[in-house]
Image (cartoon, rainbow, N blue to C red; front, side, top):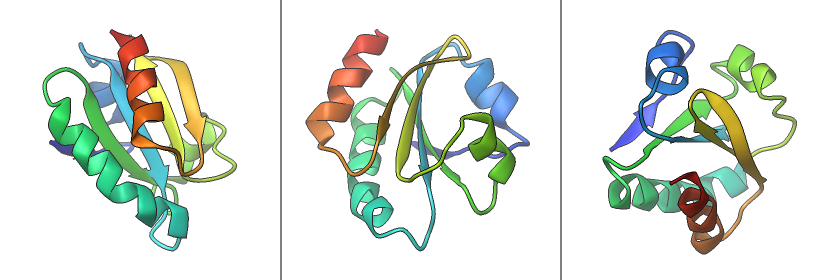
Length: 105
């Protein structure tokens, strides 16, 4: 299941999550973000129950993008126990994201 994180649910779904979280910071106008969309959806399905995979639209949630210092997108933040533990910038391979996911376990 792919989540949609907003400032309204961020505390409950991300900061207080009992499993690790992968956040995809994106925008609708971003070509590389669109390219990563299917990859993120696959990860959400494959790791359902093990990690939460969700998206934050930086145009709709600028406060959350600012909180994580997002300057370029796509930007992937890996959160564990409410803290940023790893990140990845740009359109990257699924294997590269999976390597970071394995490091969260």
